[in-house]
Image (tube, rainbow, N blue to C red; front, side, top):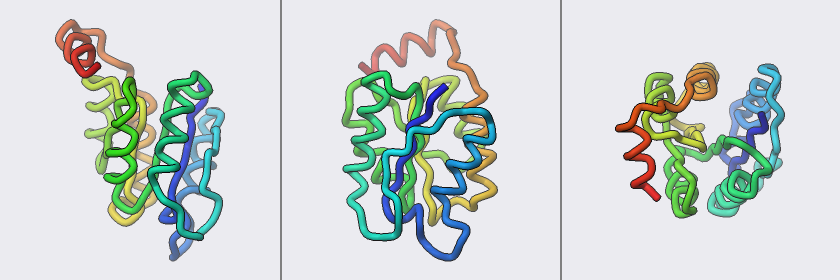
Length: 147
């Protein structure tokens, strides 16, 4: 599996540890390849650029899933969801992550650096990655209606 990962400058906000590099290492420790689309430091970056790159990586087949990080997770989710075929979900708990994968077939997880503690991000990522899509008729029907 390949996960495209990107963040704006919030991924490098102090205090350390900086979330983006920590999350990349965490995902890699699970034996998952990471396609890092930026940014690469604390200089200001417009989050739509990064959200578009992660979305494009999924839609082109370069990655199966994506993880986006900004201050709240909201900006990147709004941008990513403008791409047909992307189902980006802001999650603040492992249960939200599990349910969005199972019920909504989420293909991008959005996290807020200023909202969720790093250790909680790890638990959210685990729940999201490990939960399979439900093939129950009602979930498939609803995801299909999303377009």
